[in-house]
Image 1: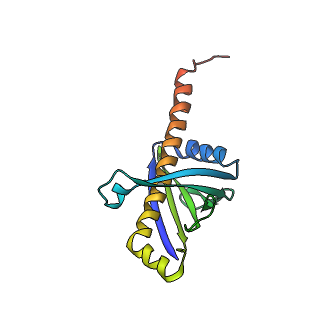
Image 2: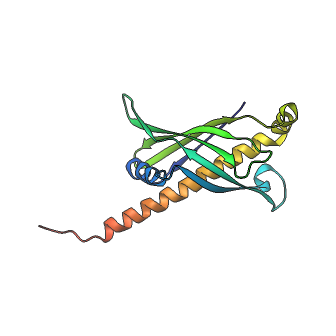
Image 3: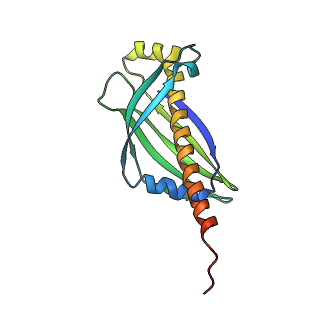
Length: 163
């Protein structure tokens, strides 16, 4: 098994980020197009690796700690239509950071094709997996920040009402 780890900080308060994630996950299965530019892997080219993956989510489970609350979301993705690509399983952990939210992705996959796949993974496969995980985090960050901007705009445009 190969482990993958990534983290991002979202410019949105925890409550807004969590609510946005929960709304997105009401549909238990999503198809995402993940694209990894080869330049991010150290190759001087504008080409990239594009792959659609089916992502299945398990409902959020809250955990109360002594100092803060965090939520963890279990998920797995597999390549749409199969093929010689690994299936990934992992979790997203969501932590409050004042007016921001930290999202930590961790998980693992088994390279296909036994020893040959493990050799490919050691040379470049793990870098592709890490870049793909970071792409997922970037997409999530952009969506959550756009949601927060929309909420903030609505609040700022709503006149103060007195009853």
